[in-house]
Amino acid sequence: MESVLYLISLWTGGHSWDAGSVLAEDVSDSRLDGRRDKRPLVYCGQTQPALLGTVDWRDAVWQEVGNPTSRLSAIQKQFLVRTALRVGQLAPDPGYRWQFLPKMPTERDSVLVVGGPGIPPTVIGGETNQGISTAVERYIPENRRWIPLPPYPLGVAYASGVALPGGRIFVTGGFNSQGFTRRSFLFDPRRQTWVPLRDAPVARAASTAVLLPDGEILVSGGEDEKGMTAKTDRFNLQKNRWIREKDAPVARIGGVSAFLPDGRVWIGEGLVSSGGITGKGFFYEPETRRWTPAPAARTPRLYPATAVLPDGKILVLDGLNRKGVLNTGDLFDPRKNTWTTFPAPDLIRRKETGAALLNDGSLLLVGGEDAAGNSVGTATRLQEGFGEGPSH
Image 1 (cartoon, rainbow, N blue to C red):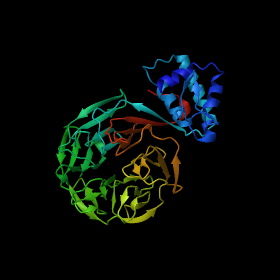
Image 2 (cartoon, rainbow, N blue to C red):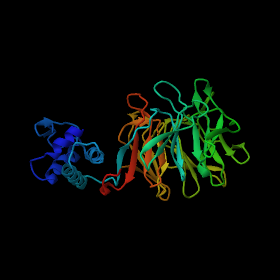
Image 3 (tube, rainbow, N blue to C red):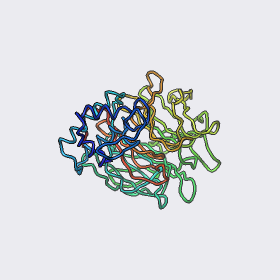
Image 4 (tube, helix red, strand yellow):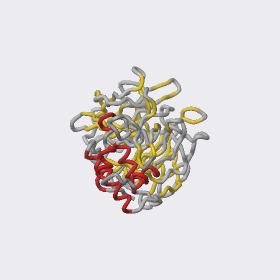
């Protein structure tokens, strides 16, 4: 792609606005080739078919403009930005943009990613191309680097957990070569150690976990030795005690969950026992301990990633369904109780990834399994505001 961008930056057929107009012709025929007549697009004597779509083009431009090792000059980069803005005038501007970050050192999928105030995004366990991992790695946004933390006490994939006040991390369950586990641990940042907690009542993997306002942790669904489960439990950290909760309405594996600004918990997506891969979900109300139906997401997904954005909306990205591995997203607005299609796809297709917010409100998406079945360490960052220019 860099060579294509370089050729475009040498455009001699007119102003950058003309180049942008040509690039945006794919809006008319959905060919992503820059032309209405469905013939291959030719720039500087080289054919570049099916490469220069509107959103794809703008994502590529921002990636290249923010690349410190790019061979493009500052003037050429400015030219590309103007071209991208012209494309944006002829197609809806998503209002978001992605950029690649340094790769996570341990390439893996089926990861647990946690983060929050005082806790930079931390990736725990997962499965590499060689097997189950105990690796724990943390991304430090200030200097754009990954650092290792003490390894998790056992190798696990599909573990569940949450970030806690004081820099602590709660982790439970998962799967490894010995099967499903009920082991649970707490990361103590002061001692830099993993402290054993009381075992969970259910040995399971691919469940969801949410921190509730009272400090208890809600763990629901997943897969155990008997298959998909709807079992739901609360964990009281102060008492180191598990409490049985009313089961979820359906058994679910590989779904996602989020705590909403209005105090409800949303659990959705995944594979359910009553209908395959689904976009349907439920709300859980901690005060009444009731489950109620939630609007179905536009795209059913298995093993997607999710995060609550600073504006309170839920973003669900990537995953897998009958169409294959995805890079698209859906956005849920709790105030309107509606879903919309997220306008800015991830930079790669992947599933079994993880997401966490950075302190500046941007979103980190890391790890996963790509469309070819390989574990990846790819890290991408989603930031709101296309017109602000590339960030570093």
